[in-house]
Length: 92
Image (cartoon, rainbow, N blue to C red):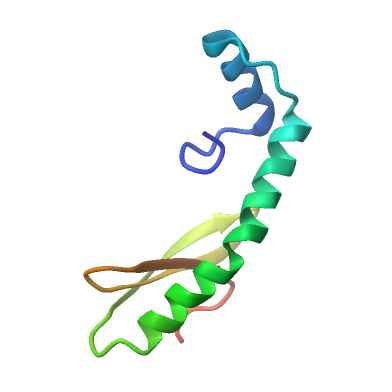
């Protein structure tokens, strides 16, 4: 809910309690997200490497707000893989 629906940890914890009876603190949710992000670093790097070396890949970008700053959400994909990443600059 926090990553896909972009709900804050506090709101997600409340929803889990009210809908499923799962009592979890916002801090525990945050720590779980951090742990998942660390464990995904290697596969994410492998996906990016595979896409950069692919004979054909689609690239696109769109502006988005990160806090108050304008950043760019870049996407690189082919028929099997997709990588997203935010960067403060447009272009390569």
